[in-house]
Amino acid sequence: MEFPITRERLQNYRHTEYLRIESIQRLSRVLKKILADIEATIIQSNERQYIYRFTNEVIGGHGGENQSAKNIIDDLLASVKGMFPDSAVNMDPLKTYILINWS
Image (cartoon, rainbow, N blue to C red):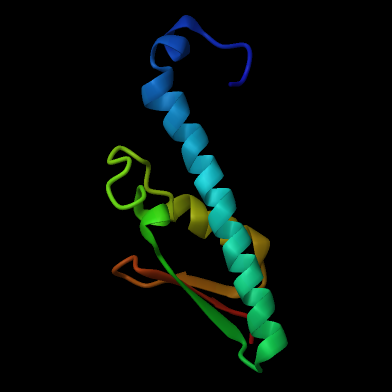
């Protein structure tokens, strides 16, 4: 919880603040996985690209556990582009994966 906090935010905490915080935490977990996978790709092969296929954690929840969970695809794409500023970072038109190409 971030302070100062208004009465309206407190009244709607479960619906807005909780989902916001939960999506930030999911984004952090996904970014850590992407970074670990890229590092493994660099160490174990000569590949110059990495494909991250979206999971339930990215598209909104864990298999029905939280149907109101926020989709974090746009936040993830922006974060990855910020982390790899001179690499090509693209998402497919169907929004199923992100391709990071550093060749």
